[in-house]
Amino acid sequence: MIDKPIKWLLSSFTLPAMTAYVQTAINNKIGCITLDRPKALNSLSLDMVRAITQALLDWRDDPDVLAVLIRSSSERAFCAGGDIRFFHDAGRATPQGGSALLEDFFTEEYALNHLAHTYPKPYIALMDGVVMGGGMGLGQSGPSCQMRIVTERTKMAMPEVNIGLFPDVGGSHFLSRALGQIGTYLGLAGEVISAADALYAGLADVFVPAAQLPALVAMLVSSKSSDVRAAIRAFAEPFRDHINPADSTLAVERAALDRHFGQGTVAAMIESLRRDPGAFAQETLAAMRKRSPLMMCVTLEQLRRGASMDVADCLRMERTMVRRCFEHGEILEGVRAMAIDKDNAPNWAPATLDAVTPEMIAPFFAPAWPAHAHPLRALD
Image (cartoon, rainbow, N blue to C red; front, top):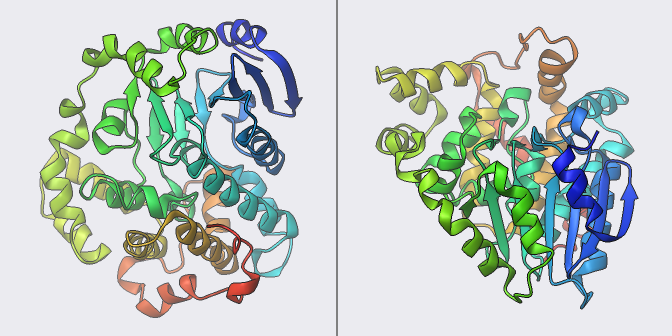
């Protein structure tokens, strides 16, 4: 079901097109992509990835499209990530966790992330509700053309280490460039942050109250301004005082966060947190003790490498890493525990942080294909 305010907004668009769970339309030179899989919090399927990609490709060189808006039909979630049940079922289908559909999903999702990041027109992500994993990949587009909008309902995270994965969909790029050590914290702890946190960390651009979203979209589809981003900033200006990024949890805990997550190893970070009696440190420590020890270490190496890479190289690295994750099987165990059996008791391999060795981390970055055969070799 499409929420009533969104239903009215959709009726104002002309030339509609529909694919299962994704609706596209153009009005007033604004191309609109609406994710419409509310029961699954807009978890991405391969068909959804393909539909979004096709719309962006169709509009990229279309003079009748000035900008793109991507949003959800539901107030609960922008996008909660990839369809992890599909990951589990497809990963178990063949030895070493591989299947053609699984390979296609990650190749095409990461290519979509690159397309959004390098899009030549304003790309507006309305990140209302849950924004996690693949949702971050859709929302954290290129800085030259992006406009990332958050609301008081925004719940943002890169929680992949909780299912035995790593912060992919370009996380190597946008987390490694977040303020201070915030990206390291988000990648290793996998914790949820608010709209104020996102603004403070540089992971969002403007705040608009959820109640004002219909008016915002109505403004976009009726505005005669050629500068869509300026029009959005002007619309959001009256709401600047509704939340204060300087009062966010990340801002208040910034010094401690940088100290703890600026340590050289995950083990040193854990020890630093253990010695801090503060509530934030202890909550973070408790969360990290539930995560995959191996994937926290892999994530730290990923973010350090990603800090000096462009987005194309980050996505190529991640495409290799995700192949290695399914070969290892950590993600299959994580998804089993979180979403299949729901016992929340994953049997991580290895089970403890002190058992993780450099020799276990290195294979995740070893080439899975020759450079000329890499699935994302064409990205630039």
